[in-house]
Length: 363
Image (cartoon, rainbow, N blue to C red; front, side):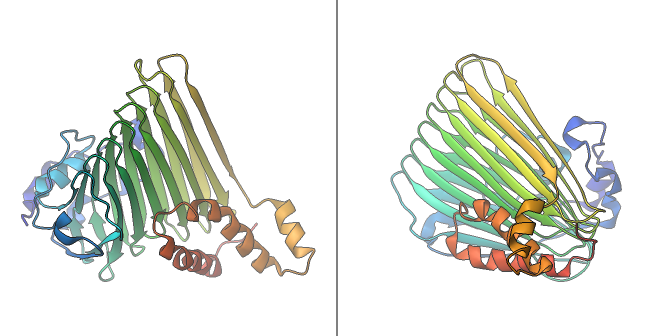
């Protein structure tokens, strides 16, 4: 695995919040000089067989939407998951990245190439290998062949000193079915930019995310649902919570091109603010360039529904328990759609743990 020349970082021009795609972000706080390019350990489990190539041969799409995706490409290594046409991988492939601390800069890369009429589930976990600050720049590229079924889940379990700035791109072929799922619990500043393109007639894409930020964490999601071909479908559901002095940002764009007639596209973002010092931004957008489409977007930011809390407390449930039950119920709609069902119980426990250690003044 090649490592980027540290002198290359001196020439990097970082984006600013003047750019709409970086609005509300904390990009102005990033100091690249604090970090040194490094390698990291990767473990692959599951029914992988000959499907996984961890030697570094993971060709990327040509598009480089920002300097961080470019830095990832320059590191020159990654993992490729290739599923032959007609193959069904019964067990999830689990890829775990152990991100070192101590000022390390890492760039995990995963390319999933699913052949026609194939099926695969991939879970990618990002964990800290130790304490201390770090910067990681993960990239995911997914090609979904005709009538293929791909399920992908990213899980952020990094420590609260790590910055993660990720980029995901997916291209879905004719009559394919793609699920992109994210669980974001860790990191100091954790950002994911996702571009899901439906390029084949009848392609269907779902995106779901669960995020929970506490302390001074910030979770930042930028999502583009792009429809190129006719009679395609996309559905997005992102649910999050912020407490203490944490923050979250969601900006979503549905793009429907001139040839994408008969398309249906939906996006929903809902965020709970559990403390007076927490804040969230939610900005849904539509760009529709043809007729005969169905589109909608919904966005809410606010505290727990007092009627739900009152209902539980009136039946003898303690206030702190009532809040935990409401939040867990709020997230269950996302948890039920995650591709790795065995992760659900662990996830509920992790969310409950965050509620127990919250230090802000609960509403």
